[in-house]
Amino acid sequence: MPQEQREGTVEARNGKSRELFVLTYGALVAQLCKDYENDEDVNSCLDRMGYGIGVRLIDDFLARSAVKKCRSYSETADMIAQVAFKMYLGITPSVSCSSATGNVFSLILDKNPLVDFVEELPAERASLCYCNLLCGVIRGALEMVHLAAEVTFLQDRLKGDAVTEIGITFLRKAEDRKHKRNK
Image 1 (cartoon, rainbow, N blue to C red):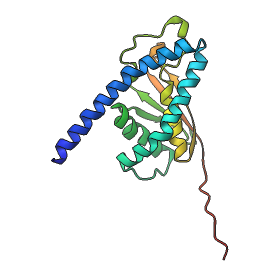
Image 2: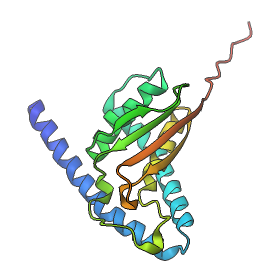
Image 3: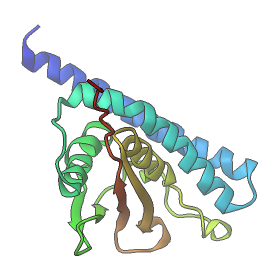
Image 4: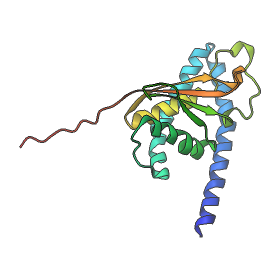
């Protein structure tokens, strides 16, 4: 099969996978809202689930993307936006750095496929972070490449904000411990 045909087939398969994920994600959040009365509990559960996905997804990402090691937080943020989001959700958020130290970034999502079938959050769920799974995925994947980060939603169109914004604060770079052999 020619390369173009293979890539088209892979893209079609990814598109169907994305669509299935988006459809089932809404059902997952609805069930969690039934299981937990408190929005903070739902948010925490979504974050934990996302973390578990991120821990496992990083291997697939590294194998499929063939990316090189990032040398800075800026490169890492760009990789998340331009490669990972494109690969798994079919979108490319814009990235902005919001700190002089270069460790705080925002991903601005013009389109969020996870909310394609959601018009608005019910008034009684005002503190629900519907897409908190994404924060957990990013945090889990980063931790697996030895980058501790705090990942949170800063703005959400579902809550009436102008944009959807995910904040990433890199906390520290885990040190690679290289042990010297005693001679």
